[in-house]
Image (cartoon, one colour):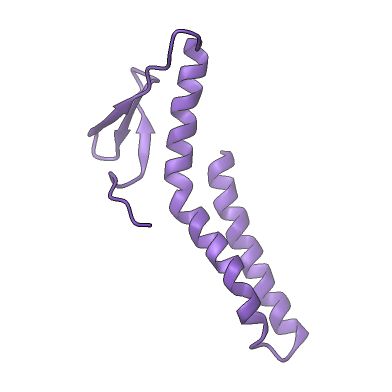
Length: 102
């Protein structure tokens, strides 16, 4: 599925932790919440949305590489070659996860 969206990276506005802007300073949206959400929850949701959106492409690429790795395993005749490829996939996944968990 391909959906048009504002290019990343996005960031939370320094002067309004409920507003999201793109890297050029363009306004994307504001998270207003509802009557039962605290201000802290609304700000947390805003930060979560920005982290998730900014990490999306890297996470998809890492998962695709891992999903494709079973095909790669068939091309290696030596165990050592497969272990090196596996280490590469794990490092790719860990780098993508670090971006989300930051």
